Length: 200
Image (cartoon, rainbow, N blue to C red):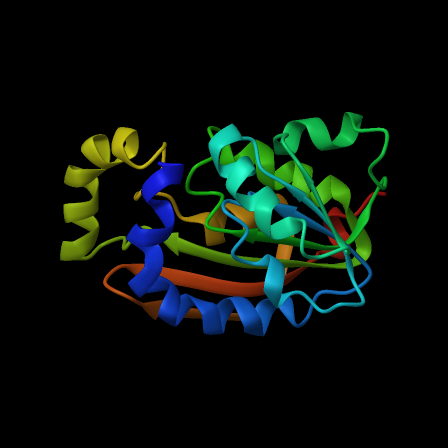
């Protein structure tokens, strides 16, 4: 997957790059990037933020490391989201968390969303860019049919998840959000922790 990911995504990234920039320009302080992939976000971060980027796939990590070495404010680690809490060299909480094309792939998106909630500061921002299931439409039915074949080919990517609803059900509230189509449905949002759920 790592070998052909960038060529496969090249045409799509010509559009997504604008969405990535819009979100990443809003990061502040100490940032956790979940699922760094091949490092496509690294050049887009403001120079005054400190980024702790995680990527569990070793092939993806190795590709991202070549880019991370060019940016002194980016620290890349070959771990998954569940390991962040136990990483002694990591901050306890983060000012910003970025999750882009991640929740479609993680085995348990509800659990990952709860970890995001725990790791984000009370006044922090979660920045999200995800493709989502086109529920109730013809394309959604097609996604349901294709998904069992697509998942093993695309390294576990799931076409039938509603990441926007998962995050909201966890206790995140969008302060800005947009839905758009690029062949499939996409979701972009800046989210905060709802005070009613915030017991930290």
